[in-house]
Amino acid sequence: QVQVMESGGDSVQPGGSLRLSCEVSGFPYKTSMSFDKTCMGWFRQAPGKGREGIAVIDNNGIIHYADFVKGRFVISRGNSKYTTVLQMNNLTPEDTATYYCAGDFAISKVRCPPAKLTSPDFDYWGQGTQVTVAS
Image (cartoon, rainbow, N blue to C red; front, side, top):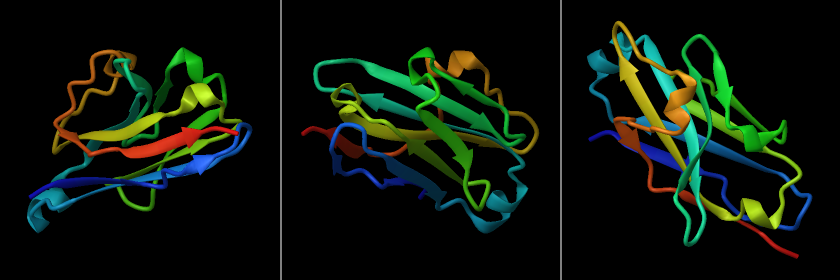
């Protein structure tokens, strides 16, 4: 069973930083070795609001950010094709939300355009990790 596991959520003060990690596991071995194309992304949902795209990254390292990121957040690939990291700096109370990781994986082709931020039709989603920014 494929699992998407986020970690790193915490409570921090305004101006603080957090590093979120995401790891996807559970693919059968041969399947996991054959997936060369990936698109992974980070999303968030604040209480009473809809899910919001933050950033997506593909297997070539091509990245698309939501406009609101404004250089405060940085997405990167982790130490395997099934991991991704979101570094968040200068956090504000408005960043308080549950943060989700999502991914698509394929042998030949995966689309990872900016539209994935607003129409996140990913195949795999994590359960989320809570980020709270407060004094």
